Each structure stands twice: as structure tokens, then as C-alpha cells.
Image 1 (cartoon, rainbow, N blue to C red):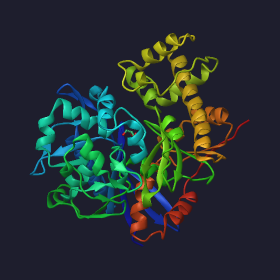
Image 2 (tube, protein in one colour; image 1 turned 90 degrees about the horizontal axis):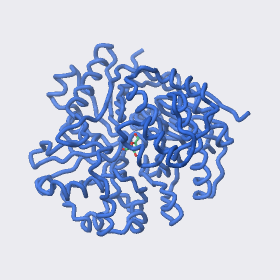
Image 3 (cartoon, helix red, strand yellow; image 1 turned 90 degrees about the vertical axis):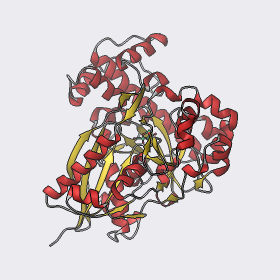
Image 4 (cartoon, protein in one colour; image 1 turned 180 degrees about the horizontal axis):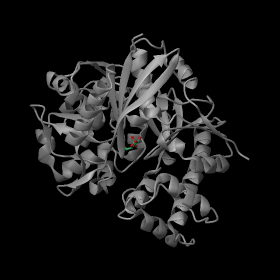
Length: 469
Ligand code: LFR
């Protein structure tokens, strides 16, 4: 019997992977064919993504499918949010793909508020204030390199750009576009009035395409490079948009938590919530599949642990760091994980220590104490955010559903159950790739609806449970 494969290329800020999926007896089966590292690097005084290297990894992973003899009928790429490139009239890259952790956006919110007060911006877009949002990156560009904006013909978000490299088609996908803070949450399209008031050229932004949109086949060059052709179909190209599709794997009344470099905690709503209380709590209404809204908060996430591991020259595995943290469980100092000092510090160990010093708590000395402090602080932040979410949505939640790489972190899961007083359901680990595949599978008729795809998913993956003692 011939198997119909679909390919998800899921690229996060620290790694990327090619996952093949197919449906067998009503279950979704996943298989990883290729994995690679991703890290921004210094270039021209800024932290930048190397998009040509990323694209060669995209091709390399496609070749791995061919080598395995498993050719996909369709494929789609998702990546992190907010970052973009500019293209000139000929469709060539203009300038660098500056990464969101670069310092160029510092203070840009103050400048942009002179054009549009944040209260109004939030009411129109529903997007939380994050210093790195596309809006603030464009404001930085207006200040630093206005000529680039003048010469630019189009703006493509990172996944849009990678899809352009695959197919030659320049399209802006909706879920990723909403992370720019320039899409109107009610109209669900670019907010032209905002774009005019910020002074950005309208020509940069084109009609928004929804997940499921058919881009077409691979360019002849790509076909030659990988040895096959396939259809490219837009998934929810924002990774968090894809991840939320794969929740809930267990409890419908549960909170959604996509856990990776970032922890994105929230729920799925049919309408945006743009009240003053929501703005003050800095919850976002990101656009999702079928115009659902991801109502969520960004929490600094495993970035903090990843940074420590890198800082220690990868001397410890994640599992070793976790067991050092367990051994230091008597250490009780806590940090505000969303403090800006943790966004891109030179040393994460020092940033954590400095925060404890500043708040007059015992300063963590050993690696175990620092990691314990981070894990405990993340779990406390999840618990506090769930309480905020309950107040803002007027709902009470019965569980925490965690998807993504971080769902493997059993110590953090235990701490989360304890801090929130709710059972934790962890998995699937490849939630984002699964969400990407679900859109392709629905479009191909494997499932009649998202509800049906979610039902199949519930029967397909083992879910780890953590209950409050
Ligand atoms: C997660 C994520 C978050 C976004 C952050 C920066 O990978 O996409 O949703 O806020 O990265 O783009």
C-alpha cells in the first residue's frame, strides 16, 4: 500500500527539523528526517539570521526525504514570529535579516507612540507590547537606514521568504503577519491607517493569505537541487500558530502552553479581547487558523536554560542540568523571568545572580542553584499567568496542556503542577510540526475539520500526566 507523506519544516530560534507525517488507521504518524541548529550571529554590528544557510538546511532536509524514499505530496514551513526581510523591485534581498534579540529596537516603542499611542494600537491590533515586534524593528530601520525602506518594494516575514525561495511566490501569510502589530484584529487584514500613520510605505504589504493556501510547485532550480517536485501549501507559518493547533491533546478545558525557546501560555478564543485589563496584563491576540485567536502571554521560557548551557560550553546535557536543579531544590530565590535583562544578556548566569542581588534574595552560586532558580521562577510565572488568564477570560481552567520540546522537561512539569494546583498533560513534543502537518492534511482531505484532526491526534501520541500530590 502506498503511503501519502506530508512534510513539515519547523524552524525555531535555536533549531530546525524536517518531520514527515502520514495517516495510518486514523492515527497520525510522525518521523523526523533531518535536524539542524540555528543561532543568530553578529553581522554589520547587528545580530542577524543567516537565511542562506537556513535555506540550504531546508534543501538538505528535503534531500534526506528523497534518500529515505519518502517523497512528500506537500510541504510547508513555519518559523518564529516578528522577523522579516525587505526585497527590492527585482525580488532581491535588501539589507540583513536582523534577529529580534538585537538591541536596535531599544526605545523604539517610545518613538512609535508619538505616531500612535499604545492604548490605540492595542485596541486595533490586540498585540502585546514586545520591544522586538516588527513594528518596532521597522521604526528602528526608519531611524537607522531610511534609504532601505525607500528602496524596498516588498516585506516578507521569514517563513514567507523561505516559501518564496522554494516557489518564487511572494505571499504574506496571516498568522505570522499578525505578530507584526500592524494587522487589525477585527478586520483581520493590514491596518492601512496605522501603516500610514507610522509612515511605512503601503507597497511593502500585500494581501494576507490564510493557512491552507496553495502556493504551487517548487521552482525548477529547487527541483534540480532536491531531485523531486511537490506542492507547497501554507501552514500557520507562525510556529506558535502551528503549535496551538496541536493543543489540546488531552483536556479541552485546559490552558494551552507551547514550550520551547519561549513559553507561550494562553487559550484559544473566537474573538479578540482588547480591554484595558488585557492590555495592562500584556496578553496578545495573535491571529490563528480559521481566524481563531491565540490569546497568550510570552514567558521567557527555556531560552534561559539554553543560554546557560551554551555559556557553559555545552559541558552539561539538558538532563544533567535538570538533575542538578532537582538536587538544589532547597534553593528558593525567584526571579521575574520576563524582566528585560534576560532577553539577550552577555551572561545568563550573571543576569540571574544580579536580579537576586537587586531584589535582596540569596544569590545562587552553583550551576544547580541558578537552574533551580530559573525552573522555580518559570513555574511560578506560569501559575500567576493562569490566574490572570482566568480573570481576563472569565473562565476557570482544569489543566495545563503542554506541547513542544519543553514538554519533555519532567522537572518543570512537576513544578508547574505544584505551582498551579492543576494536572499537567505533556505532549506531543513535536506539537508545532504536527500543527503544520494538520493544516496540510485537512487541505488534502485526510480530515474533514480541525476538530477531526485534533481527535485523531488525541489517539496518536502518548501524553505524560503529572498530578498534584
Ligand atoms: C516562539 C515565537 C513567539 C514569538 C517569538 C519571537 O518561537 O514565535 O511566539 O513571540 O518566537 O518571534
